[in-house]
Amino acid sequence: MLKKLSISVVAVLALSIGTQAQAQKKSAKNKTETPLVEELQPPLEPLLMAIADQIHTGKIVCEAGALIQITEKTNAPGRFVLKLKNENFNLMPVASLTGAIRLEDAQQGAVWIQLANKSMLMSSKLGRRLADECQSPAQSTVAQAMKLAPPINILEPQKDVARK
Image 1 (cartoon, rainbow, N blue to C red):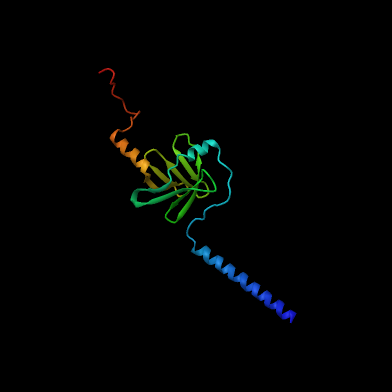
Image 2: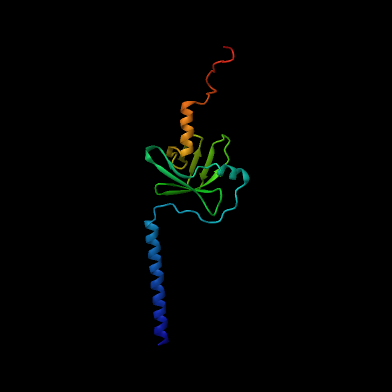
């Protein structure tokens, strides 16, 4: 009787493990989104936190009707999740010599560049833009102001107003 009981227990355990493995395989096949990295990460240095404080979050409309959602991670201040269609990118600020605000997902090769009047998402792995002409409401306001009063082009000769 003890022998029958132990064989039954082994059979139930084997069946249980096999069912779990099949369920994991099915969920892995059905999963199309890039998983979010939810592990604890060290705090960012002050320069990078200053960059992160300038990131526009929420829904951002891009050309061709593309929609991007940027959310700051609750467990990792200064780090963001950018969602475009079925893809999630885990972004963190990177210092830029040009003054542009830049976020990168080094693992997936994604780069988010935020200027005063527009933003874009690029893929360094694919060598192309994934989303362009993206504007938050604040960027849209700046873009309209730039149309009304274009910035000075330092490469073109300027009119000398003082001599007139």
